[in-house]
Length: 127
Image (spheres, rainbow, N blue to C red):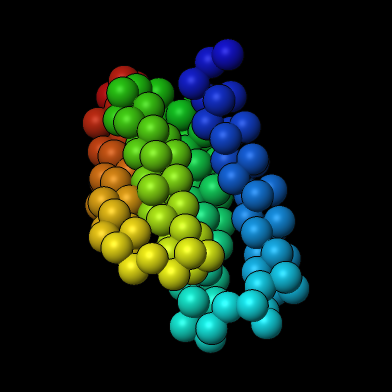
């Protein structure tokens, strides 16, 4: 499977899971979590959807601007989303506050993804 198709599929899977997690949070967790922890869960869902769409956009951009930067962007979006949103889900569901310490690592990876996406459009193999 080529990198473009892989990123597109990964983005679609993340999008699918976002809808499932959002429904789970809104219905199953609404009365089980404190309002603060429900908000934490919802932030994870929101950022997962943003980056599912970013990953799909990266896959589409790869056809216009192929190169290593966009490959790195997609990788950063995948890993960053798993770390960022995953740590927020774990924090909300377990209440173990120390899990939140890894959330910023995911955030930094997402920032790197956006920088790589910018780099991929500026310095691509078609210049």
